[in-house]
Length: 398
Ligand SMILES: Cc1cc2nc3c(=O)[nH]c(=O)nc-3n(C[C@H](O)[C@H](O)[C@H](O)COP(=O)(O)O)c2cc1C
Image (cartoon, rainbow, N blue to C red; front, side, top):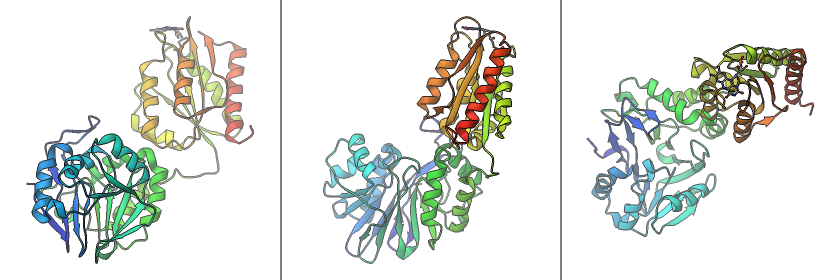
């Protein structure tokens, strides 16, 4: 099952297959399992490893490295990303060979020392830095936030192979190793993007600019099949998935409402009038029962977010928190916010949601508004004014 597979001259896959994996990181269901891809590259002068595997697979991984090259003859390890599913065997590897030199990003240097309690010799690499293994070159491309701050890509120009770490990956455990030998796993490729990469679309666009003009024969991600059928199409797919929202020359606001008795909805409608009076395009979604995908898409198109929430049991109600939990799963277009709502007697919700938005790096464009039960005409006028204030912030007027 966990075989060594030569993927190019003196380049080997020796990762681990994990077909039984049901959920990744206790977060994301993986109905088709996954793999932890790791590689070995033999140059004439030096031997390098690229990433390792998840901790439970350490022994099988080290056995397979040793089957190719004795562990004491391994010169260096490239850590494209420090997350334990890729660095899990690093501690044991360094115990067996403490002379291995680690090449990684500056962020990874710090993370590694906090993840692994083992002495290590690390080198922080710069953009474009190369290591000559003897007829095989490793070139490093920084790819921060794909999907951790520590991520780098490693290019092997002689073989036109990009070791892209989690980018272009999929939680899919293939029978064989390559995409052209596997059944269609495009749904897993897209859902991997959706749960892992989507919060960082802007960073993905920056990283894609570094690789889209490379002549590649193969993309080797750290999960799922190796991609040799059409590497350009893989990059193009990411370009589409990570595209910025279309521009129509307008500013866009999203109003998320929850309103069992209708008062908060009326307040939100007044904010809408204020926004629209200043030419802002407004989308409105009632949070109760709303499709999470619809909210996520809308957040990515919104320059501003208005949350309209009543106080229920001394808090904002669950649909509001569920909607707000989606913010960190996408790349919101803008982070201007405002909060308002109706309450009966204690009125905690507006302040709590404002704190949440500030915690998510939103700038509040207007002081929160909350009114007891049914808002009066003056209250509604203040809500209209809130809409105008949000519009002014969007238009850069303050
Ligand atoms: C189940 C329930 C619990 C509530 N708990 C609170 C509360 O803890 N504090 C408060 O100020 N108002 C509370 N209220 C009152 C609502 O905030 C108030 O009715 C408000 O006008 C509802 O806004 P809406 O018309 O937008 O639904 C509660 C209402 C309901 C239905």
